[in-house]
Image (cartoon, rainbow, N blue to C red):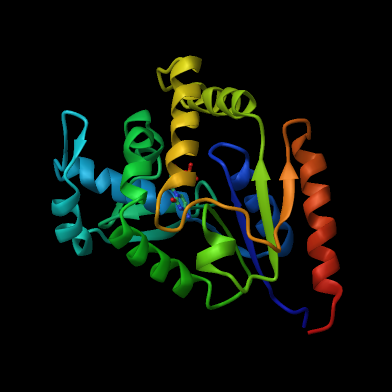
Length: 232
Ligand code: DC
């Protein structure tokens, strides 16, 4: 039987991590885990629990209530996708709203939130044969992953992609609003003190500002296949 490896994909907001991760997972018949969705679900939990008022996040209350947020993924046979659930309810769509995007970076900067979610992510990857995307996968969650990619693209290119995606989902946003959010999240995610976004030393960089999805997929699979070809 072919060996199973773990693949870590990190990078800036909206640079196509999930598109690449999903296509690799499909190709190899691996499990895809979207860790950003877990931080988004925690943010939705804070919003629903009224821990964010007048743009202020009540960090202490969130820390105290953290264990009441039960975050899972369930496979949806209709959409053929694994979808995020918060306390038993499907929140896959809700967690993509601008309201959640606006507060997710401060929530993800809380060490107690990270500790809980990192532990959950490590448990999910124990089976191996996992493609996981996020900000700290290659550095903190799965430092032993056999393949690591670090993805990047110009902020304007990323904002345009995110804007198109939100519009396609019927959400009312402006391009400027999305660009501002992308830049702000880059800043918070890469400067926070706990597990900031940074490139793992052994990661392969994928700058997809000028790459099509097919080109990026071929590039990534070449690397993955090389690693898979090495006998374990
Ligand atoms: O991948 P995304 O844009 O859906 O992630 C949402 C936010 O969650 C992002 O701004 C940073 C945070 N995040 C994180 O801190 N660590 C991860 N492993 C994944 C996401």
